[in-house]
Image (cartoon, rainbow, N blue to C red; front, top):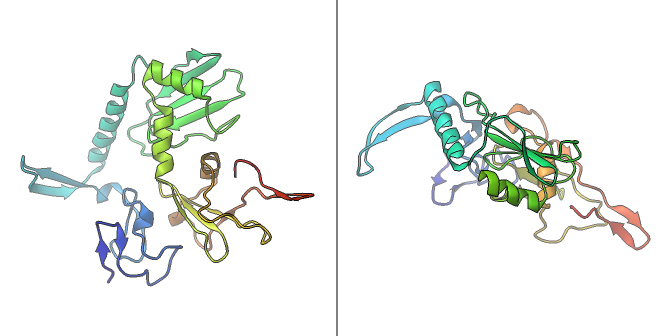
Length: 257
């Protein structure tokens, strides 16, 4: 048996199977997506894990019951309606001119599919740059042409539609957990949806500074190489970090690192 401390979101005793880099975390620090009733292994939450609770005006629990697919659909629809209420004059699934040759397209998603969140596309019609963002701030498709739309485009998008790209992205980035370095000088990255990625070490002749973290643009790129650990058997899959380039005076590390 392992004791859990809700105030810190940590177990008080070490993981007996010593899984991961931190043996005291609970559900990969993401109890929204995972559960761990035994304290030994995190598993993905399912619809039937949803608990519907009725409370009175004083906050006392009157009744509770297991959730159903219908409950999940209702919850998803409420979230979609709340997001839509914050948007202004935004038609669904239609390309609209924005500014300086840029366009946007809002898609409300599928409330019956948890993976198909409402999302916004921002792009140049000729295809040189294209970006998309879900309502939780995560990127929907891999960025094309850079790490994100220009600030002028982001500001115009917020002004015309109410979609706050910068704020959404910041919330998502702030939920990313970076563990490491471990004994092999590797880093574990855990995303809000529970996906993980591992950053391989640099050559031994180079040391990252204490407290080093990858840049936001790198975390976004790395997201598309992440995996759901519950679907993977065996050792972690390492994603190569941009390797330093030998130069006469030492090594050059790509700037977005």
